[in-house]
Length: 279
Image (cartoon, rainbow, N blue to C red; front, side, top):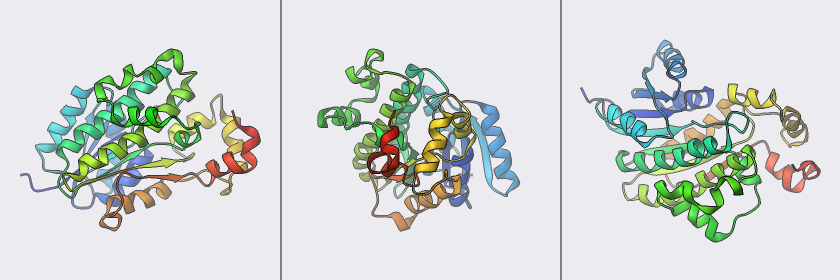
C-alpha cells in the first residue's frame, strides 16, 4: 500500500545515515549507492534500529540509473525528503570521473528529484568547504554552472580537462557548481512548494575522510585541524544537526542556501594561520 512518505538517500555512508536517522521516523527509506554492499550495510543498521529501509543500487553519474531509483521509490509512496551524500573525494578517482559524479551527477539528482518531490518536500545535498576555497569565478562562469542544461554541463569550456589542473581542482569546481545549482534549482522547486539547500562540511570523520587523512594529502588535513578555530575535525552528527533544521519545518524560510560547517577552517584559510599554508 502507498501509505508511507519516502525518504531517498543517495550515498550510503556515515554522513547520509546520520541525517536520515533524524528525519525517517514513520517513513520508508530508500538507501542508494553505486556499491550495493554499501547500501545493504547502511540498510541493515537502520533496520536493526527499527527503521523501514531498503537498499538500492544507483550510479548517480547515470540519469537512467537515477530514474530507476525514483520510479522504485514512487511505487511505495510520495518522495517527501531527498538527501544526497554521494560523491568522490580528490584521492579516490580521476578528475574526469569526479566531474561526472560530483558535478554532473548532483545536477541530475537535483533536476530529477525536483520534478517529483512532494509539495512541501525538502532536500539537502552535501557539498564541501572546498567550493569555498577556490578563487572566485566570474559572474558569467557562476551563471553557466548554475543554469546550463544538465546534459551540456560537462561540455563547458571551464570544465574541459585541459582547464582542470588536478583532482582537487575538479572537486572544487564540482562543489562550487553544487552550490550554484542548488540556488538555481531552488527557484524551480519553489514552484512545487518544496525547498532545497546544500551543506558544505569541512573534514568530517567518515571512511571517506579517513581515506584523505591517511592519503597523500594527510599532513595538509592534520595541519588544517591544528590551525582552525575549532582545533579538530567534525562529526557526522554535527552536520546532521544542521540538516535536521534545513529538512524540517523550522527551516521553512531557508531555500537555495549553502551552510558552511567547517570549524572555521575556511575563515582561517583566508584570514588566519592557514593563510600561509595555501596550496
